[in-house]
Amino acid sequence: MKIQVKNPLVELDGDEMTRILWSMIKEKLILPFVDVELLYFDLGVESRDKTDDQITRDAAEAILEYKVGVKCATITPNASRVEEYSLKQQWPSPNGTIRSILDGTVFRKPIVVSNIPRYVSSWEKPIVIARHAYGDVYKNVEMRVGAGSTAELVVRSGAGDEQRLLIHSFDTDGVVQGIHNKEDSIRSFARSCIDFALDQKMDLWFSTKDTISKTYHARFRDLFQEEVDLRAEDFSSAGIEYFYTLIDDAVARVMRSDGGFLWACMNYDGDVMSDMLASGYGSLGLMTSVLVSPKGAFEYEAAHGTVQRHYYKHMKGESTSTNSTASIFAWSGALRKRGELDETPEVVEFADKLEQVVVDTIESGVMTSDLIRITITENSKQASTEEFIDAVATRIS
Image 1 (cartoon, rainbow, N blue to C red):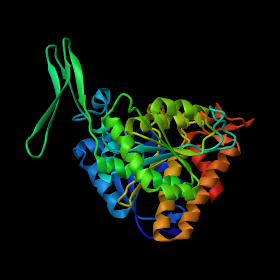
Image 2: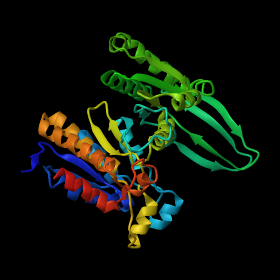
Image 3: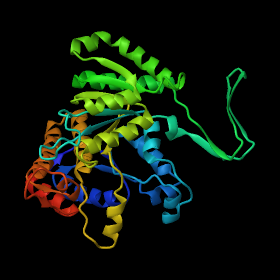
């Protein structure tokens, strides 16, 4: 008897090798056990190109409407990808588009497995990273400029007043870039991080580079501090602390810490540092990711990319050993949240069981090639992409 899920999940399909294993996960680990309506959006790069990226915007709006989405990894095309897939243009990051519409914060947490040692030996507890999911370089405008050009930052107020700042006078060819952010988004980010830290009873760290960016980064620092000050009593009651420092100092401290805190980062910092943390805890395939919107919507995905190299091998008919753990946890995370919102504990229990079975499978010595190289388990068995998913399916049946 399948477990009934009351309300739909919004499913966002993706690209390359993750698209292959995404289908395996759905057909072998989800649909045989739960009866769930999936509102399907194909966010593969060719589908995005065909719809002029409208399908990405439609998917984000569907997540806002139905509150829970689950997303496969997708390609953000560069010039070589445009040529490879015969695209109309270099479409923007679908993750960036969805984050902008949901106005969310990305929380990433490592999946800790006992027989996968951490590269940073001091990390005894998980470090959760929160990434501000709006603006900065992900909503930039940029151009190449020629020698003799002058670049200025020009701002016109609603009343027509104008402010100008010289960026640079170019004596050679160069490039320029403009970025922005919004105070309401920064406050929303701070509040989401504060709520998460209080809920998990974890110390909250925040870091910028305000010594260099004395207006842009400093505004982040000040707004974050204002929101923390409003919750000072809550921090005291929970027995947790707020700590602000420069991003470079934060990186140094993180490498020496024992973990167990939430690290809030600006958009680009969070993008880079989440991959560093994933590797530090063993593998990019062992990192969960959830986009939390202040509008009450949630989008779950793996923190890694489309595993391009494995996809090319797969297309040649060669065997691959791609780690599907984070993608499975994207499905379990979405189902758990759906169950919580719908007040269906049996759905939550299934999500918990699925995650535990995945961990048990790895700890039993059955794992993919990325983990085989670093495991402390002797006589472990390297499983192919499909063999690992089948091993999980056998244990959960």
